[in-house]
Image (tube, rainbow, N blue to C red; front, side):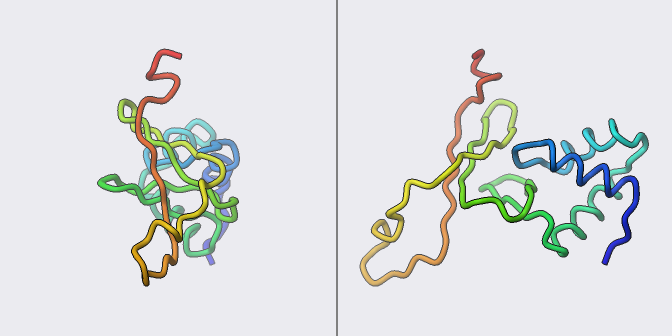
Length: 124
């Protein structure tokens, strides 16, 4: 178990406020505003420990480095802005995924990622 530090507490706080999946760089920028001098090495070490301890989960997007979000969220999907690369949660699921698989196939999990422009990049 990783010991609690001001830096780890700042990183936890970042996830509590974010409301969307974050890249390690986004975590670093936000945590450094809370506790000046947080290093990227500390961020990566904390992210690894927090994943291992089940506090956060990895969000994998095709062709992208991983993002992270709090564990225990209801099932949901993601939207990635193709301009700023930020990732946002999409609540809920369209359902009926099992019927999309070929006959005889068993769906065990799925992830849907929408791409486009976020409201900021779209000028809205």
